[in-house]
Amino acid sequence: MISDHQGSRVIPAELAAFLDMVDDAREGGRPALHEMSVTDARDAFESASVALNAGAPAMPCEALSIATRDGKNIPARLYLPSSANGALVVYFHGGGYTVGSLDSHDGLCRTLARESHCAVLSVGYRLAPEAPFPTALEDGEDAWHWLLERSKDFAIDPARIALAGDSAGATIATVLAARLGGAVRAQLLFYPATDATQQSESHRLFADGYLLEAATLEWFYRQYAADLQDPRVSPLFATRLRGSAPALVLVAQFDPLVDEGLAYARQLKADGVRVEAPVCEGMTHDFLRMGSVIPEVEEYWRTVARFTQQYMG
Image: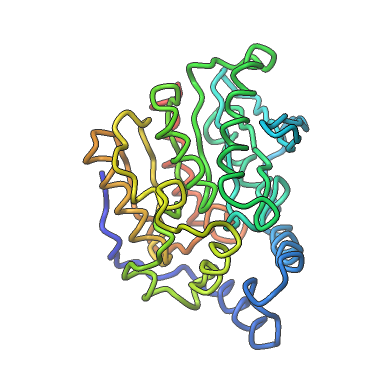
């Protein structure tokens, strides 16, 4: 099932109030991320994430360190819900390859673990501009192989591992899923960035006022990569996706990335991949982190739960 993004639902009142608060802060002189230094942008993103993590389910989690191919170590966090059944989701956080962390997406990963009944390994890949393309992808691939080598230590079934992420993290997940093929059980792609050239209609329709701004996207890509048409940066330019794992592609109705997310879902389907790509009506980018303030988000977590039960059980 691949939906059309032209839905009829309006933005929920709670989300509209949140967007108004963001606009008021901007009018009060608070700069956008792309108007800050990288350090200040990271600090602002982390500060804004504190409230979004409120109310996340409690569960055991373990801090881990993963060795990379260049001799460095990156942090990771393993979430273990009481309902875990041997399956695991490797998760890559969003943030345009430039901001975001294990902490900023702690609440999302806890909710994903609860709803999927899977352990979740959140990977703290290195960020641009200090670590530009393809470092994030290489860190993700190294994390995958590190996990396979240690799956017995964590009581994980190596045949039941999925890749997941939101925004830029979803890009990392889907590029790795295409590369790893049948070794991946499923892919969960939440509002993925699949075309860094930003030429779609939705980029024009939702360029401003819908949380993720076109100028911020452009700034993120400048930090990360020079060739925006490289299929490892823009998976929509990939020539072959056959053999990729079944995919759930959640896209938000009021998101500059909605068109490219749906286009990528169609491309997966054309290559014979099983795909579900519902448009989450009334939602903006990053909505899965807003469950504490927007009741409607629960509906879309149920979609995630159903998909993971189908393919990860």
